[in-house]
Length: 264
Image (cartoon, rainbow, N blue to C red; front, side):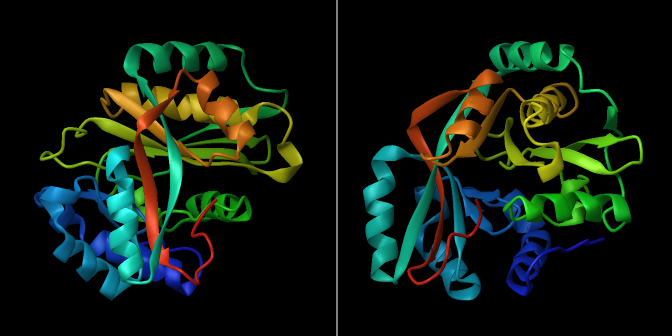
C-alpha cells in the first residue's frame, strides 16, 4: 500500500511517515503527523530524537505543544538554522462539535451534489482525485494509505456531482499514541473545495461531515483543527462547527530558514 502524491520531497516524507508507524505508536512523545515525523511532548521525546529527525528529514512536526514552550522551541531550532511555522489550534469536544456539525449537515447539499462513499483503496483513481483536489487547493496531502486508514483510525469524506467529479473533501484521524494525554483527540483538516464549486458553503459542509465521522466512526473525544492567524474564512468555518481557539497550545512545523511554508 502507498498511494504517494505530490512533489518528490512530499512523497519521500509520506513514505517515511508510513515506515515509522510502529515506532510512532510505541514511543512516548511521538505522534503521527502524516507528512513528517511528529512530536506532542518535547520532554518525553527529547531533543536528541527531534534533532535526529531534523538531520534526516530536514523537517519535523509538533502537535499540541504548550504555548509557554514556544520560545524554547524556537531558540533550539534557531541554533540549527531552522524556523518554527505555527498554526492556531481550534479545539472542540464531542458535545459541542457534534451538535454544531450535525446542524450544518441537516441543511443539506446544493442541487446536483451528493455525498460520496468513503474511499477504501489507497491507489485508485478516487483517492488520487481527492489528493489532486487537495494539492490544487494548496494543501499538502497525505499518502493514500493514510487517507483510507490503512495504518490507523482515519476517515476521508467527499462530496461530488452526478458525474462523480469530486467537489470537496476533508480528512480526520487519530494522531496520538496510547502514551499521550491526547490519545483520543482527532485531528481534522485537508479541507479542499474545487474552484468551480466555491461560494456554496461546501467547505463548512464537508468539514462538518468529517467531524461527525471522527466522533461516530473513530470514537474520538475531541477534535482539533489548525488554522493560520490570517485565514479568516477558515477560522469562521471551524468556529461554525463548534470549535474554539485554544490559546494555550500551538502546533507547527520546523523547517530550514530558507524554505517556503510547507503547507497552507
